[in-house]
Length: 129
View 1 (cartoon, rainbow, N blue to C red):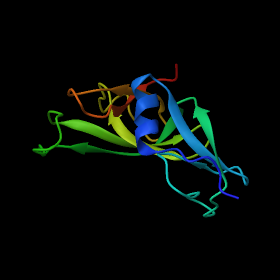
View 2: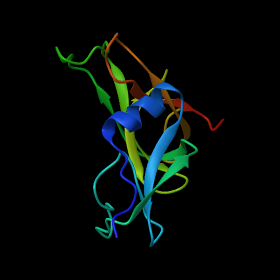
View 3: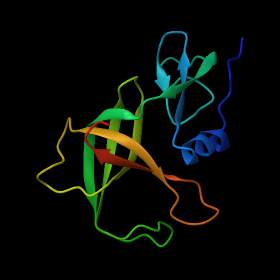
View 4: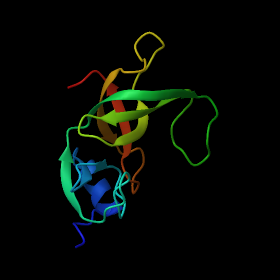
């Protein structure tokens, strides 16, 4: 039995409305952003779920080289976050400094559209809302 599909377009349409959607398999694993199967066990029986967007920083790095295709000025901090419900999400940390970001820092996912016609980008604000 195939579960509910969550397309990339649906994921970003929800993000534009401030909602974070993911997928959950029968074993309880959470996959975000969407894929056709569970990122842990490979199950295709997935259910759409709404996620809180809250999580903790697993890893982070500073980006100092500007990319032509990416509309963010350098430097910025990119973080990999483990969400409370499970699953990992990568995004840009808003207003980080060496004093207030660390492994395990609590963050909340936010979405910002940086250019017209573009999907919203994932940002993390420090502290849990």
